[in-house]
Image 1: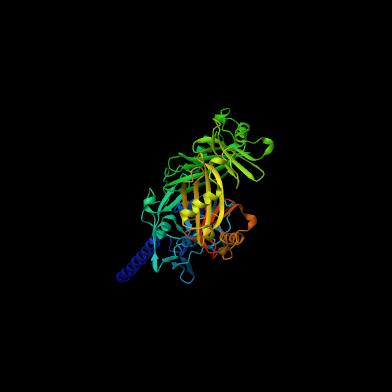
Image 2 (image 1 turned 90 degrees about the vertical axis):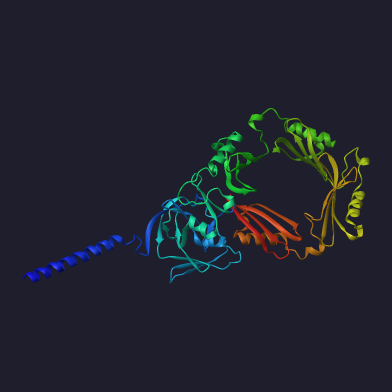
Amino acid sequence: MNIMKKSMRKKSLMALALAVALMVGMFCLPAYAASSQSVTAQLSPHYTIVVDGVERTFYNVAGEEVHPIVYQGTTYLPLRAIGELMDKNVNWDQSTKTATLYGSRGGSVTKGTPDPDAVKQSITASLRYDFTIVVDGVERTFTDVNGNTVYPLLYNGSTYLPLRAIGNLMGKTVVWDGKTCTATLGDDDDLLVTDADSFEQSGVYIGKARAQEIALSHAGLTAGQVTFVYVALKSSGSQYVYEVEFYTSSKEYDYQINASTGAIVSYDYDAEHYTPSASDGSYIGKARAKEIALDHAGLTAGQVTFVYVELDYDNGNWEYEVEFYRNSTEYDYEIDATTGAILSWDHDAEHYVPAGESGSLISESKAKEIALDHAGLTAGQVRFVHVELEYDDGRWEYEVEFYSGNTEYDYEINATTGKILSYDHDAEYYVSSNQGGSLISESEAKEIALERAGLKDNQIKSYKSELELDDGRWEYEIEFRSGKYEYELTIDASTGAILSYDKEWD
């Protein structure tokens, strides 16, 4: 009987021990024992991502814009789009749930359509403990600033990694400015902070809102009086600046503001009818500026057609820009808005010589001779593009441009003394006849640019195109805007190859 009781007691103790062990095991299992966990996160299209000084927009493989996600205070970015910035191919293996970044994609990027209507909102994402990230054959794991392991998020078919992990993958240092919701990834020597995840690093930049305030205060306006076109953080030389542009009913304002100090680097009021309120009554006025220009040109208002008269701020001085023409001659004047002094003028007419000065200036043929003699060429060896007499910095000059073979020549010659003021061998806007057939047309270059941007002609504005010779190669420099985005492309005029492509969110 005692033996039976001891046996039963022993079995009970063993059962109890087993139960305790099971309970302990259950409590010791990690929260991510499952392969995934549904979590609530925040879609954050208002976040700004700057990589090497350029604001970036991300697209999925279908060309749909994908936005940063915030989960538990940490910013997540789309892995595939980051792979494009790294020039890596991105492969997904469903059987092993492995995302692999490898090789080179040859600079190709996904064309996409901006989603300007996206708003900050709560979303349901999946925290994936079972995803593996492999970069160039090496499996990568990631930790937060405290050394805790962090895992990818899955949302709408896109894999996201934390900002700090993205910085590690790209070999970039991360700065997070919580005040402006701006994440900046760059080289160590360009940044002030060496790590960031969810903490705030306010003060790195003043922020877009503060840049707007500074510009408005300087212009003597309030936010309710203007419409903002864009406010963008950009790299300008050795510093970051905010470019701020806004307008009122008839005035456009452009500012560059130091992103760190808030100092106004430059500003311009491109407004046909604008005069700063602080200076009302202190300027000569448009009518007087016209009179001064006409009197200098020896003309009357009835003899000319005015193109425009604008008050502009340039190099710390307010001045009137006056432009008019008579027959085939165009006249351009810059007049000090306070004193009425003529700062510069130009008469763009091929055969124009100011009255009373024709005897004191050398002729066009003499200017050609001087340029040819300096170049060691004869008239029979060259073809002239243009010869123009212009007034610049208080003196009359001839601008002489010609080419010989594949070489272009530009000269500036003092029209009074015949002295060569400057020269180079880079024609700005000439296409020689033997090259014309081998270059693509401007319209073809435009088609290439639009195709690269994934846009149609009716979707863009502010289009500009210039054909230039750079380092012995003819190139099209193309710029345009679409929505909040600004595009800049350089296209080889001989092959049609895209030499550079830049898209910035303004």
